Length: 230
Image 1 (cartoon, rainbow, N blue to C red):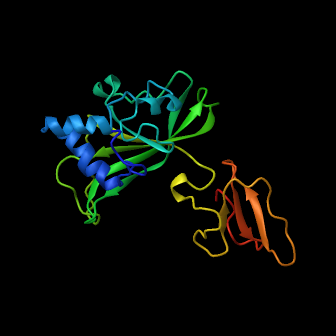
Image 2 (cartoon, rainbow, N blue to C red; image 1 turned 90 degrees about the vertical axis):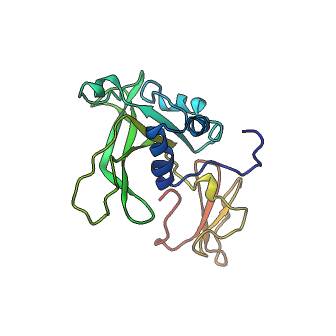
């Protein structure tokens, strides 16, 4: 989609991912809509490839995005037979972290379930944790229950929607500001492409800490403010 102006990005909410994209993919009633969605979120067997190879298969609106990529992932044959999904790749494996959580609509109804996974290099139990992460979304079957309902929703497993991203130790690119612009608290500033941190003096209580991106996050010297990456 080369006709889009600079700055336009595919940046959906979780509700939009589940209620529109995943729901319409599962229903499959509108072929014209499915063709458009496939250009945005392609169908990829996400567990066959290593995470750093997946961005090249992303859709038109995500291709070249440095932060996140979206894919539809079909159910594996092992799952059809009642088994567990195979999350092994050639160099490592995906491991679920934490407990699954519900995805809610704007009117506070449960529309799906999200599971977060982390990629490890090597083989369990000696794998090495990487910065690659993924959110896997599954839609629910039938009418969405309210958040106060005690009923456990039934999930649809034919296709899941996956958001792939790489954990950052610093501020996301979307949140960056020009030199000298305050971010959040007036005491915190961000300066781009500074070779050296400013020297402290009695009249300058700002100290610099360099981030992995080559930027400096400036903060006042009191210890209560979070440093970069926290």
